[in-house]
Length: 414
Image (cartoon, rainbow, N blue to C red; front, side, top):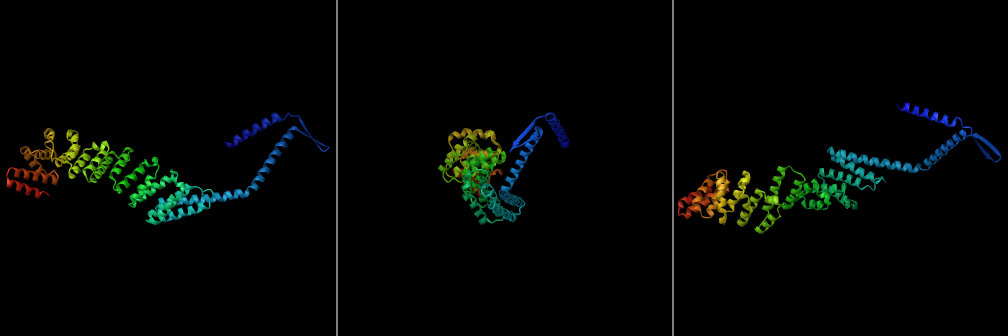
């Protein structure tokens, strides 16, 4: 097909030349030092074009001859660059093939060849990539000392402060290695150096979450986990479980009621609306001697028990069981309503019985606590407290034998 096209073009040129030059009778006369030369116009034009072509070719040949040393230097530089690029690709291939010693050697060879290549000597990204491959290979080989030396060289380069591309990747990779080394402080320091846009990426948030948990900063980890959940870094079920776990860790880390109250105010509204989180906060408040705060936090959930699932309802009820000391009279209608709606659930029965006992409503409390003490579904600690409450009521009624029997039953709960 190409030959046919060239043949057609040749025919077109022949036709055009015959049409324009065939009937041309013009002459060109050249006078030079007493000599006269006459040429046909067609021949003159052909000679003129040929001379121009010859001069152009001579100029190109002379230029090629004069630039030969420069082109030879460029060729050698290109050859060194290709050798360096080949070594870098080899290092990458060996790294992903889990041949880390070979990868480290290839990365060092790439760095050495880079110094001999004018095209790469100013390429910071090439150097950082090779250094990261060398450091990653040393990390896999458990040679942390040499790995840290390589990373210090990476971060010592002022060009790494540009905050983009491979330089941000170097910080993320170094932070990941610090977490694997259980060095939370260094990981947090590296992550704080990231630009705002990079710090919001999913991988950066995952590393920040791990570093916060490693540094025992559950509140910071909770905020980070919530950002990850918004970025769909977890499945909804996994995110819910993780957020509850982190909130629980933050709650257990408090040491006085004021600290717990400040923590509760710092929680996201979604955490405050979580029944399990509120129940755990209430249990911690009881342990710190703030039963009134505990009841305040679980009151909204107790008023809407029907809207909770069984696990959440049990958690709220057991929290109220522990926080029943000093319960206010306005709770009595709520307790009666809960007993009417969920009198078949052991946790609700136990909470209502303990609250009645605290209000000295012995008649109502005794039957409920007896049911709770015998309920195998309740935790052992709550059953033991139910027996002890029954023993206390028996002593209030001067029934010492009954009180001792209840105490023996409490001691036998295992």
